[in-house]
Amino acid sequence: MVLKKLTLALFVCVAMLASAPSAMAKPAGKIENASPEATVIAINETIELAQEALKSLKSNELEKKEMMALFKTVKQRAKTIESTTTYMLREKALGKLGKARSAYKKDKEQAEVVALMEKSVVVFKAIKVRYDEFN
Image 1: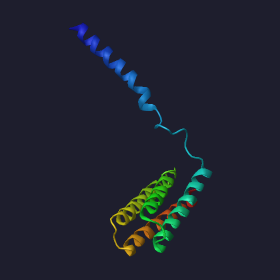
Image 2: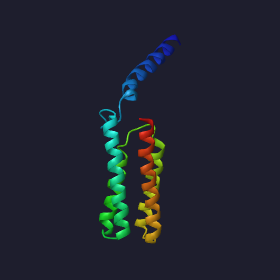
Image 3: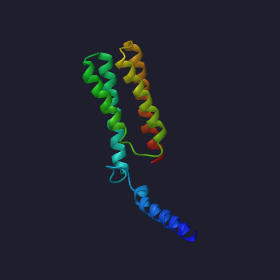
Image 4: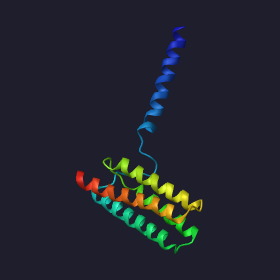
């Protein structure tokens, strides 16, 4: 009986030691946190891309495939904004961007898509204001 308990305890210890390094590891592909300068650049570039997407929606100058690629570019650039003070706003902006993209993909009325994208741009601008307030 004692041998069974000792074997079980040893097994649990080995399992815990084996899993500890993977639990403490950084996410795949991430080398380090962004510097404040890099965060400011990411915010500014995201706002520029979002405004470009809004302009393209209003003018209806891009084909559907190109517009979908532009939505994706805005989303990818927004995900590089690494700041705990703006995290919730970033997620809100990405949600609104996703709704605009979804409405565009489903061929909803252009006015509806533009309105959703305008809301997204407003929230992206709010990210800049919030970040500047805290830094």
